[in-house]
Amino acid sequence: MQKAIIFDMDGVICHTNPFHSLAFKSFFEKRDMFPTEEEFAQHMYGKSNSYIMSHFFERKIEGEELLQLEDEKESLFREIYKNEIDPIAGYLEFLIELKANGIVTGVATSAPLANLELIGNKLNLFDKMESVLASEHVTKHKPDPEVYLKSARNLKVHPSQCVVFEDSYSGVTAAINAGMKVVGVLSSHSKKELPICDLYIENYIGLNIDSVLSLISGK
Image (cartoon, rainbow, N blue to C red):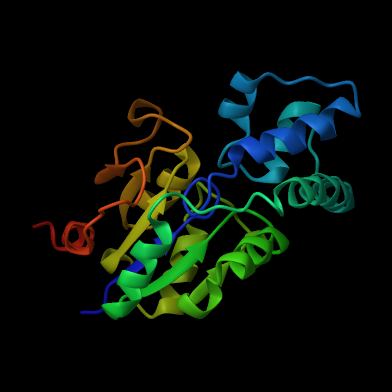
């Protein structure tokens, strides 16, 4: 039976969160708002922009206002990050090994498509992914499982045959809600800050494909 590996992007393919923090700090400083790093860790990493904006502005941010604010903040992020793009150690080698073994792969991020394109084009990811989904491709964001269930459909693989790599509480929850196995990438959070995962990694160096795929069979 065909198996699939699906990757979140921020904190999983690249350690982008410090740069998102810089972008948000600049964004909020223009509005005389100064969230702490602790607040970012709790209310930014792995969250959708609609949640983040609504939380820090203490009111519902939606519709055209959300689109404008999101575009401003994400443009700041891309400007800051465009010359800093660097995959998590061992990631590209692991991905190449997956493709050499005929494993279908996808990326499923809560980030805007423009961010995914920035990173994907720089790292030449798109010719290695059979499914590419960003925030624009779903109506419900993580922890809702929509992005992972849609990924499984794109990959033509049953959710039970998918392993997801995630680094955030909402992302891990989304994968679990989708009925998938989860590898927790400890780039932004500790084990105790995440729901229980099937496997944990700090990076991809020496990560064995068989050990990952065995999560599906339960061996």
